Length: 208
Image: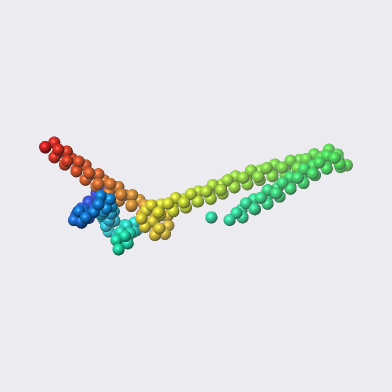
């Protein structure tokens, strides 16, 4: 909390200096130019308040200076495995049919054995297909999550000044949090100045 208050004080001090510079040449500016100059002075004051310790603050200063002068091989493997299982089930069914149509000398015992064997094979194939589908769902969910994180990371790098200079996600998150904290300090100071200006105008109006 103490550091946040110090940050706001440092920003206010530097912004006032920037506003003095803008006011000295504001007579030569239009409304839009004056607005852009005030915003630029606020951004630079916020960046200089960090004293160049963050990537985003250095990027803001550098930008102001410049302005002034995704293989499908897994699917083929899964498809070949499914075809193999279907062929195995077909062969098992053919064996079962031959057992029923051509009974062996052992009679019902041989047929019962083959039927049980065919049933076991079908149950094993169903269990394998079920586990394979679950595995495919997990893999696809993982790939989707990684793709989503990569997309959000690229968006974040574009939003945060100097975000493209961050080498990993951890440093990018740290820069983002520091940038958000600085923006909050900037907004708090601007809100206080706006409220003070409104109170001053109200006092002058009521005095008249």
